[in-house]
Amino acid sequence: FASSPAIDPDTVQRYSAPEELEPDHLAYSGTATVREEHVEAGKDFAIDLAFQGQHVFLVLGGDGEPLAGRVLLNGRPVPTALAGDDVGPNGRLTVTQHRLYRLADLGKRGSARLTIRLAPGTRAYAFTFG
Image (cartoon, rainbow, N blue to C red; front, side):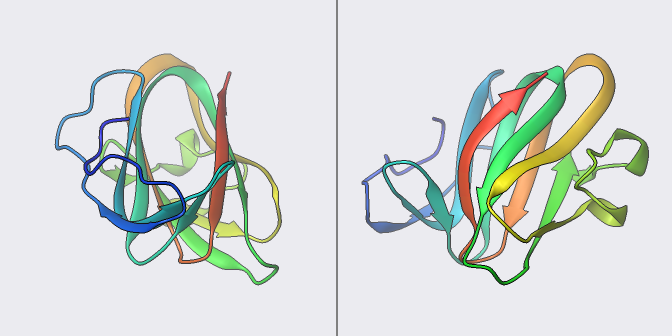
């Protein structure tokens, strides 16, 4: 975990992500509450992930209302050709229920930085990779 401050569970905190992120690390920016099994997005919340792989998935959920998000690859909206099945044009993501969301499909194994901007109330649980 590369953000500051350190996580204080069940407390609303404002996080800052570093400009550079080491491989296989993640960081939060914006306001969020870290719970035992998930992080709940607050204002201007994003998760930055420096990863190696071909496919990136994230379990997300909310309270039943559609929640808007956006997925960036190396600081730009993920191109349609590299977007996972749940990401639309211009990196748009809509979280409608608790499930596994397909965020990126790089076509081949590689290294990149993925930023997932989430609407307040969105819950993020666990990443998986392929």
